[in-house]
Image 1 (cartoon, rainbow, N blue to C red):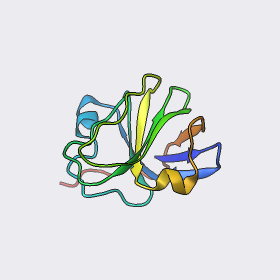
Image 2 (cartoon, rainbow, N blue to C red):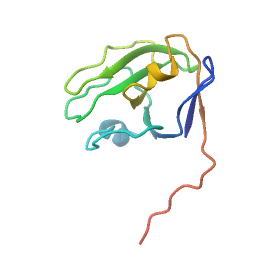
Image 3 (cartoon, rainbow, N blue to C red):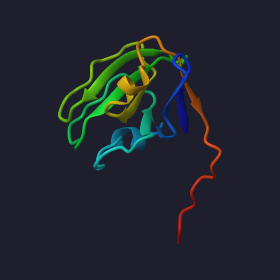
Length: 124
């Protein structure tokens, strides 16, 4: 998926994964060594995250149901908790520095765009 900040007319990521099942929400980014440019994870529903077991810092953007940014953390480090964001419907996790580089701020409108690339097929 692609994610755009429509307020700032910037691309936040073009390889954003969707974590919408209990299993994918629990796993999150655990076990990864980092996020490359354009990568990220959108966890929904979600109002807070933990960084226990993580190996790298991330930018965290909480979004309400309409896609409005209602909370954020810049470079949240491993072994920390995010703040609880009651108004959030989901959280977008991005490489550290993405929010500053794109000028993303509270109140910005974030939009998701389905990627036109075909879904990968499992190999036998």
